[in-house]
Image (spheres, rainbow, N blue to C red):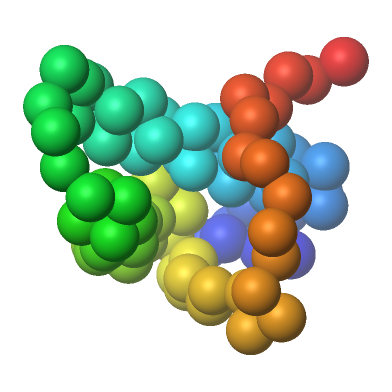
Length: 80
């Protein structure tokens, strides 16, 4: 992959993507901490912020939500 004149490896793209998602997850958790809100409200906020912010961190990046309704538990990405 190339952004501008810079080659971006798949590994770097994955790491930047994971870090961006983690950042937005933390922001979402901080926003709703100690509040009684529905799961749907939190999910809608997270999705809208991800769509809004992702291209700021990943130029040319697009957000596509899992059409297969992934039901796993999200966790913090840790680069090994």
